[in-house]
Length: 367
Ligand SMILES: *Cc1c(COP(=O)(O)O)cnc(C)c1O
Image (cartoon, rainbow, N blue to C red; front, side, top):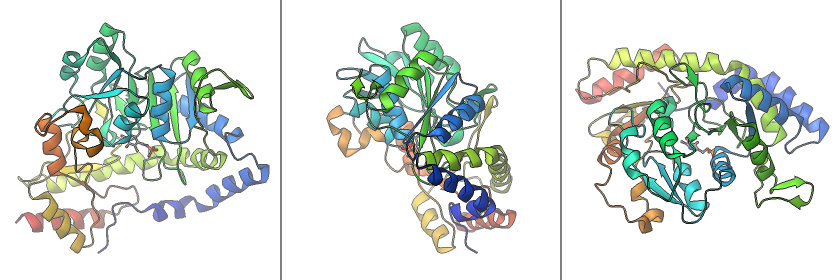
């Protein structure tokens, strides 16, 4: 049996006509960049996330970059974040000239440990970026409490977390801004790159919208130095169609996760993902922890099962961040996760037979 990590074709086939019609309609208007469908998607996403405003941008990475620019983070500043995330989180901090200051993750959820944030705050700290890893939100109450005590903005990296909840609240709407990604593999995936910034602050949204078009508040009159962070109209049109299916897809991911939990429960060596009681995960990824992880990955590949390692190297150990001066051993929970985690297929169109097969192969390897 073949069980790929992700099957974008299977999903596309269920909505082919609707998506192609929406894309064709955009082409007929020839308004390709930041056009009317982007306005419509922004309205829908603000409503979906429960935010006052949404600004469609070119990617999740640019959402982070543009948010940092809008908040005035720059050279000499520090931004506290997690070392166990996709590179873009810390890369965006570096690109505005600021220093990423890492603090370790919780050993079970692998989200930033809120108790480690306050000791890392200095006079140079300008923002905090928690990441909602694998679709589970970070501990936002204590994070917001620290931020409020020090007057710091919070940028939620919600790239993996659309539709995830924390104590009933949607990802992206608790912090100062929330950055979402529509990279094709995300729960809500475009047919290319796209992202959005959501916020409860309409003034900040206005500034972000200006930064998105090279900081021009009026055509060819530049209030700030921004960038080209525009979203393609074609991406917006496709996302409008797909947004209607998102909750159904995420419900299927949750059901698949529950099924894996059940099937892997008696395997002592394998740790299934931990979800806090007050969290609603969207199961962007279903990530187990296993001894001999690399051997398990290779074994599963031979059995036709696609898996992935998110992430094999903690960010404080990346070559490009060498000058930050971190050492191996600085963040033991993050480093240990990098050695043990393995993401299993959990995409919505997966069948029960496939899930049973994957779990069976993991059992076979472990025995
Ligand atoms: C996907 C992702 C991003 C970047 O989003 P892109 O749309 O690929 O630029 C940022 N942070 C995290 C945690 C992500 O998973």
